[in-house]
Amino acid sequence: MPLYDFECRACGRVFEAMAAMDAGEGRCACGGSARRLVGVGRAYRADAPWLETVAAVVEKDSARPHVRAFLAEPSRANHRRWMRGEGLRPLEAGEARPAPSGGGSVRREVWDRFAARRGRN
Image (tube, rainbow, N blue to C red):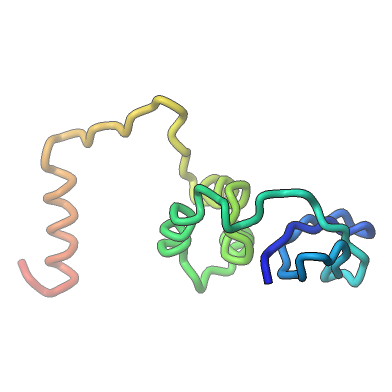
């Protein structure tokens, strides 16, 4: 069964759910009736692989609300909330990544931390 977007008539929540192709109604978690929205569905999301790589680095056992929301529904909106919650800022269109300052100092610091964790000096 394909995934469709639904909007609850009772609480207004928009969510994705599997449904038969001819189903026009669904049920929300609140128990209300939900109507199916017109959309392209998850199969056509160009950003799905990108979101999967982000979800791979999120702390799965964190209790912070922005992390829980992103893991429950990895959407672009929840990704932005997660980034704000982590103190990160997405790159603007046309903005390049800043070059690391100090040449190889960042690489050296990462190596030193790795060696310290492994008991090497």
